[in-house]
Image (cartoon, rainbow, N blue to C red; front, top):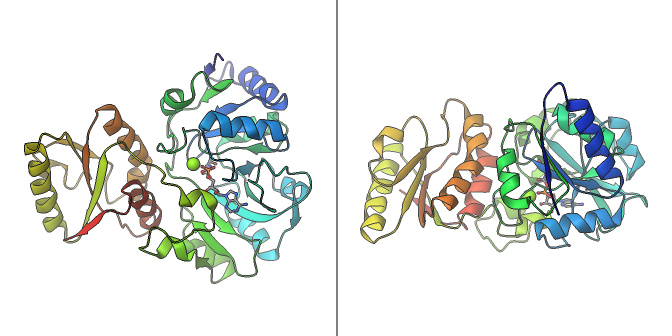
Length: 348
Ligand code: TXA
Ligand code: MG
């Protein structure tokens, strides 16, 4: 299949979005930017379109998709029950990087929900995403637009790398703003539970609806605990290299990573280091990449997946990363980094 790649420009935007919408309406697949990561869209109400999404990503079909909408009212078209608390969250954070889980109605095929009676819904804030969803009929299933098991795409080039030739169209809207997938909160149960941390933090949610729990499997150090979001159980976001996180007093971290890097290099391995602007000058061994600055956590979130991809390309075999347990997004950043590291954390 030939994949058409369009870069969004004011002069041609309307025409390109219409074309994307037409592809979605006839069951095709279109990748588009959202404020979190690029999504791979297909008509959420068409079982065959969902099946095509799984095939293009190489994704296990028991891993449900998120249905994207472009108007709050559309939530009621696919759900059985929306609680008052869910409405408060929608009012506070939609459009935005929050996904909520509801009991689904009969309109949503099981192939979209991986066989579950619940459906994940998100109303993204990104303008192009919203236009594509509207043009496509209002209900667009969109997992992250990466090959299953690779880091989520934060720019169109990543999508091209993974999915070119496998989908109908890629809408290039530049780099995304957040860089980590949306927060997921299960609102289909009596006590809401956060299934995946993201930019919208536990604190932000609690400020609106009171106490919410974190899925116990997210907090447990035991990587075998079974998370409630099926997708969280897979080894995800995995770089090709062995990745180890070093956590602790900043000076000790720098010293330990430097020593480990020297040893690995002496061993003939190609070493990558993930750090921040504050420490980048301190590392003298290996390929050193700064994700951003600790004074602006979002810069770290934005660049993390891209750096993991760059290390893949450079055929790095050993990565050492500083820990990024920053005040607001730390939970989300470390959740992804720990998964990428297969839970290898060294405390110094
Ligand atoms: O930011 C995002 O959410 C991005 C952009 C494209 O919107 N999408 C995204 O989709 O991250 P995906 O498919 O990569 O991740 C969806 C996660 C998976 O872990 C999946 O298991 C979980 O949501 N999920 C979906 N429906 C669910 C449901 N009914 N119950 C529990 N977990 C669900
Ligand atoms: Mg994903």
